[in-house]
Image (cartoon, rainbow, N blue to C red; front, side, top):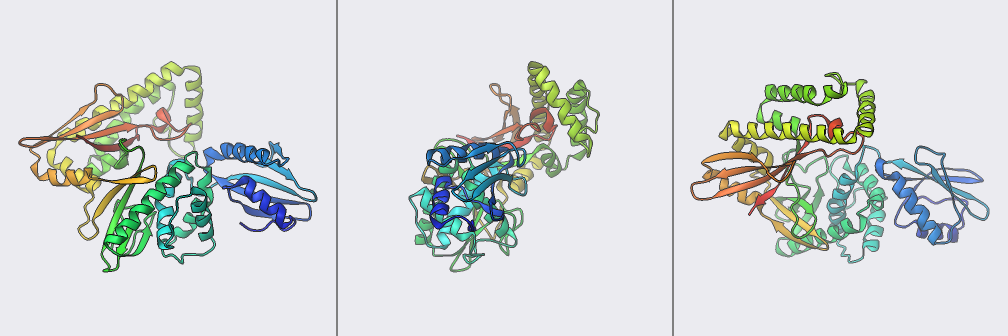
Length: 423
């Protein structure tokens, strides 16, 4: 963190300790005031402000919580001869907490492994991560222009409501990398945020990429949760699903049907999501939700049901199209760079083999049957039927946006997830 020039070393050290583990950048400073910026995902800025003010109070720092300085307000701390004003700004790129959480479990262990570090303490681990933000790409983890994004993520990590949990998951993944290194010596670990290493398909599902000393590559897809929970192994959207299936006319028909059945009922035109129309449309939807809450939820359930029914129909239309989709979008086989799936829970990990099971079962499939779940509004299944056994893929479709763009406001383009094989 840059120095606040008018604070004594003792004052600055105490201030940093009080707001730890949050970090800041100095925006401007003069003879009376320093303005510093703490960044967090947009929807979490108020939570971060309250958390920092609680930490200041706990450490006996007087402060004033002010409404000015942006929509979140600011925090003013008077020192003996100087004032520090904390402002709360969103991270660039529209980062969500979901993205931030996944980055903690991906980027943190990659950096630690390449620095040959081991951690059991979350605080020590994060101190190390902060130290890497001023050292460029010395560890070789970043590909292309991903370093700037990585630095922003590291500075924002403490704003996550699951910061400690995800840092513990990062320790688990670090343990995995270290154990893998004892079996097959590792030359480099790459973070596959946006760019991929040379020779790796841009669509590869790996979150991390391991390059061994023999120059062979391995992609690692990371999951985190409870030991027995099922995390999504495919994250896509209705629009993308139809495009990947080559069913654009069916997609357009569904979109029109959803408008007529749902959005036209609250007075929205067919182009309600387009360009400058969207802001006014969101206001209309939110007003409707507040005034008619029960009806709003019913409309969302109706929309969910219509979309799920059509997804099931599309999967059942053609066996070969569905198998091709599973191969290309779920398994995403890369002959040159194989993929393993590692799941972290607490500070432990295990290997997930659902995609391996899918890959080996695909040649045995005689027929396919998609069906809706009876006890859930969002779940559905794809039964892959073989000669003597059936493999069932658990799927879901639901909203995944934050208010006010969730549920009805997300339109027909809900999220589709593959949540593993039912054993």
